[in-house]
Length: 197
Image (cartoon, rainbow, N blue to C red; front, top):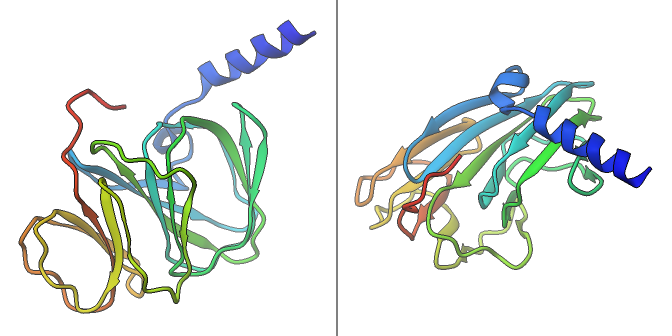
C-alpha cells in the first residue's frame, strides 16, 4: 500500500506542469530577466487550478488586493490553507520546490505578485511577514524590501511595485525612481551562474 501511494505521488508530480500553461487564467508572467521572474497571480471566487510546479527560488509575495483563504494541495507534504490577506501585505519565503493544486475560497477577486529571485542565495530561516502598515525594512545579503515614497535612486537594481496602481516595474541601478508610494525590492546580490528553471 505504501509503495502504491509513493508511485501515485511520483506519477502525479511527473504530470505537473508550468503554471503559465496549465492555469493561464490565474498565472501571468509580467516580466523576467537574469535577476527575477515576476508573475501576477489572480483568483476569482471558486477558482481551482490544475497541478503545477514552482521552482525552489526564494520568493517575495506582494498582495495587491485583499484576498480570501486559499488551499494549496501540496504533493510533497500536505494541504495548506493560507489565511485571508490584506492589500499591501508582504511575505518573503525561503523558496521550496512545490507541486500543488489551488482552490480559492474568497468571495472577492484576489491579486498578488510573485517575485522569484534568481540571485545568489541568502534564504531567511523562516518566512518574513510585513503587515500593510509596517514601514520597517527587511534586509539580508540577497535583497532589501522597503516601503518608500517617493523612492530615491539606489545603487542596486530593483523591482518597484505600486499597490495603488497594481503595477510592477524593473528599475536599473542608479536610475531615477518613479514618484509615488511603492514597495521596492532591491537585489543586493548578483544573478546566479547556474541555469535556473
